[in-house]
Length: 164
Length: 189
Image 1: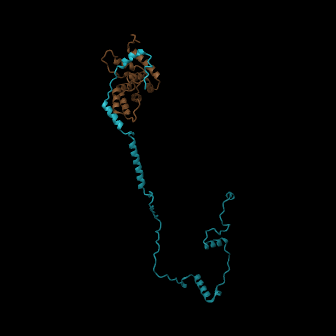
Image 2 (image 1 turned 45 degrees about the horizontal axis):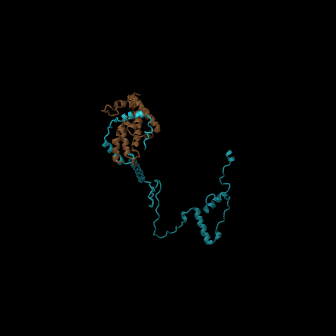
């Protein structure tokens, strides 16, 4: 792969990929690093490198989470006790990073994965459907339901001024 | 791949919240960009084979070399094709030394041994006396043949003829002396 293209992918998608891998495992940086190195070793670069990266990160993160579970016999929702996922913003108009982290971690894994991949990874619903093994319509329904639940948890105002 | 999210956007009231959520920046990764690029470049230029392949191949060839060296060092190894095989024969300990062929003797032929009448047995002396008489006086000097007391048995005759003609034993054996296969009646007895 072209080093310039790889550098662009790192600059543009590294935080989003780490956020995506954080949904499963405790060491997301290692997972993303392995995925990027694996991408660099490809003799034929994939047609959609971003989608390829998300797939590699997902597979590796799931495998890593299984290993962590075997090691620690840890039950419960891993995402609920993680550190802050977002950088706190100085702008008071933006959402609270801590509340967003807590609310996002409270969603189901299916909804959370789709929201993260679509909002911060920029993947289309077709790409997410290929990634998760469902249909684009199912992904969209889960995305909308998850987003509505998230807004409800964070107490964000509806466009009509009411809190759903 | 075309993004059909606009076609699948039935909830327009969620769009402002999604935009606000999207403005949240994920935490930066604790990864060095340069180190990551270096590792990626090193991996891209590294060998494609797994690390265990070459040690395994080297070990296999080392084991093969040891086996071939053992074959080469063994005393009963076969000679290479095209060369005569050298066979070492160890004589047994209790065998007699192999006699050498007699060397040519340049001596005069041995004289016929003289028969001395005084050192022979009485029968031989009598035989010599008969021969001397026959040569002097003729065949009338032969003694009268003694009548045979008993005729030799057919077995003795057959054995004698077999010995004279140098035939394999049993050629003239009478049927009565030939071995018989045991029959069931014999077994019953």
